[in-house]
Amino acid sequence: MQKPMNQLVSRIAFLYFAVVLAFSTACVAQSGAFIVSQHGHAVGTASYNFTAGPKGYSSTSVVRIAMQGLDYSLSKTEILSTANHLRHVQLSGAVNGSAVNVTAAPDAAQILLNISANGHSNTARLAQHSAAVFLADFDPGALETLLALAVASNNADLWAILPKQTGSQIGSIEAIELATYADEKGTLDGKQVVVHHLVANIAGESTQLFSGPENQLLQAELPQQGFALIRKGFALTPPAKAGAAPDQSGPSAQQ
Image 1 (cartoon, rainbow, N blue to C red):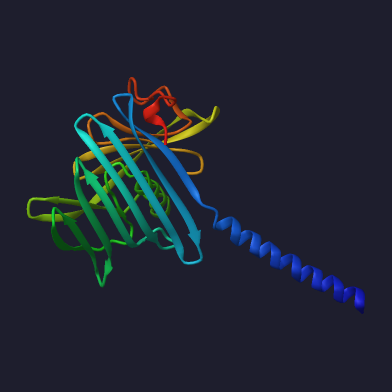
Image 2 (cartoon, one colour; image 1 turned 60 degrees about the vertical axis):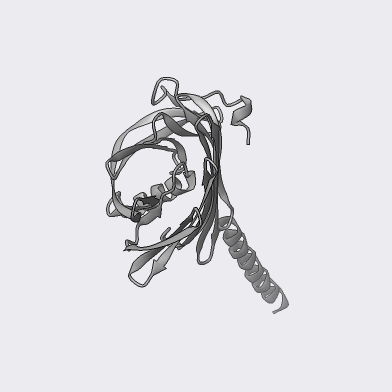
């Protein structure tokens, strides 16, 4: 009886460590580092990091742009459900010396959005949609979340929370029309990869998205004039636009 009992204990121990290993693998952080370019010239950097847990995901995004006419920084922390639905987000940023802080979270059947800037704080309540992404300017983590939501919803019923104060309007929530185009080609860290091409239309502006075989964001052609996010080590072949791939070895491309 001792030998079968030992075998049973060994099997239980093996299953326990297998479960622990699977859980640990699920919690491995997913991250991406990007160059921010304008008309093919590197003007800054951006990054995101996602960590999975038993109740969902925690993520951070960091953006830094320094160029003539634009000094921009962003730091965002976000909590998402296992379905990538927004639970809470906090953003701190600055544009040309003017600081802004934003928080957003579901509240009953609405999204409670608070924007603090120039010593004033304003609050808005927006319509709540489950598949809504908090979409700040130049944020690659938001676009990564959008790609995940698009797969889960088959590109339908997607929404963008835009944390912008325009006059008396305190932010808005806008429908996202996502169209899929033919696959393209590219290289990632020197290896050939299939590149999926999508176009997101939000409030009359278009963002071209290029994602990899694992649905990871590789490149985004942004609605801001001439700007793009390009994952370090990635090159679209041919480029989406002439001169779209910046020199990734220059001093302004270093993180």
